[in-house]
Image (cartoon, rainbow, N blue to C red):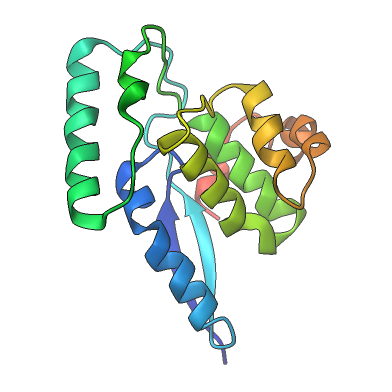
Length: 161
C-alpha cells in the first residue's frame, strides 16, 4: 500500500515557497512509495483591499525570515507596487485546475506560480499573467478559461479535498 503525504500549501505563502525544494525532493525521491496530495489553504482568498505600508512591512519581514532559513530567493521589488491586492484565490484556483486536469501537473504548477511570484515579481493574481504562466506547463493556457466550470464559484470547497 502506497503512503500519502498531505501537503497544505498556498501559492502566495512565503513559507510554502521556502519549503518548495523539500517537497519537490520528497516527491521525486519517494515517488514509487509516497504520493503527494496537495491541499490548497488560501491565505487571503477574496481579499479586495490594496496592501498598505504596514502590511508590506509585515510581509517583507516574513520574506526575510524565509530567505534566511531556507535560502530561497525573493524579489523585493514587489514592495514598490502601489496597487497590489494580495488575493490568493486566483493562484489557488490555478493549482486546483491543474490537479483536476492532470494530477501530475499539480506540483509543477505550484512551483511555476511560486517562482513567478517570488523571484520574477509577476502578479499571479491576474488572469493574463496566469495564462502566461500556465502556458509554461504541460497543461496549456486555454484551460485557464475553464476554471469557473471546473472549480465552481466557491474555491473554499476545493481546499477540503
